[in-house]
Image 1 (cartoon, rainbow, N blue to C red):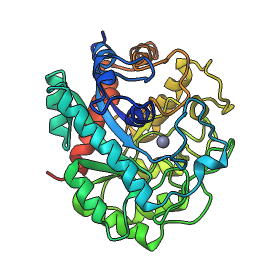
Image 2 (cartoon, helix red, strand yellow; image 1 turned 180 degrees about the vertical axis):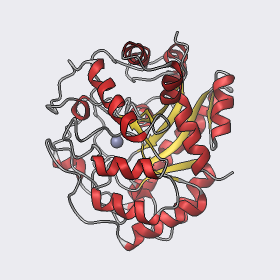
Image 3 (tube, rainbow, N blue to C red; image 1 turned 120 degrees about the vertical axis):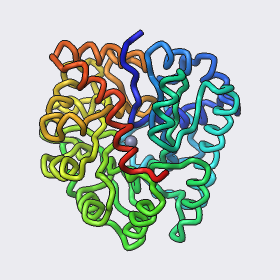
Image 4 (tube, rainbow, N blue to C red; image 1 turned 90 degrees about the vertical axis):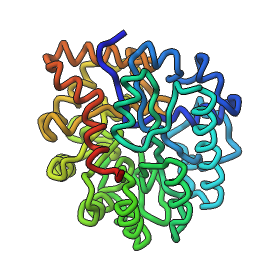
Length: 350
Ligand code: ZN
């Protein structure tokens, strides 16, 4: 048990439950399930109070084995049709809604910061619904309206592939995020539609021109839910100092991604990655964004984790590393929980 509750910026657990053919109510997740990084019993033991639950559509819908997902295989980056993405997003959204019902109050889909705080007090897991790569959304934003009504509160306009809204960054290492064009006209309309509804925009996976378009157009704080420091690890998925300065100026937030390839200075897919290397990114982010701008964005069930993290229990070890690096209790509390709540308070509409 840890004294700190964690509200986390990103996981792909719903995707894993779906592709591992778990029961419609996700009973495996509720009772304990070794094939995912997060399940309810482990979450409770680790103080995992919830987070952004991503709905991401694979490029190859017929492919069901994601245990060997290859970030360098072009087949995983092929563009996705809107109707296919919407159908798959419906499956994940329905899974979340059924899971909530079957949990008998132990899991709740949340749409405000207040609800997240109340869930943490009541030992409920809070799910904030997020779309990673907005292929499911049509250019008339009908799906946006319907999904909002079902609980959606956060959208990353692109995953690392192009769509009608914007262009994503590839995963190759080393690389710059400054690759490709900015937002399309429809992408610009998506920004204002999200601003109007009070849907958070997530800039992780967006290329640099798209990032600057959102920075110019959006009236909300700038957010990257699961990205790290480019100055330490030159992955195109990480944020340059200039981007961090813009996020700081907007009172935005960056969540630390646990993927070894976005942490290690050599960018290697090597799980022998030290917790200290993760803390180094956190320290740098605190220096650039201030104590209110840094949070966690694990990418559980969507990335290659350091051995010492392993699963959701790893948060307790990461917190210990923060303590050893002389992070004060107040700062740890902010990184683990408060900063996401405060950011959502500034972004979502009542
Ligand atoms: Zn991602």
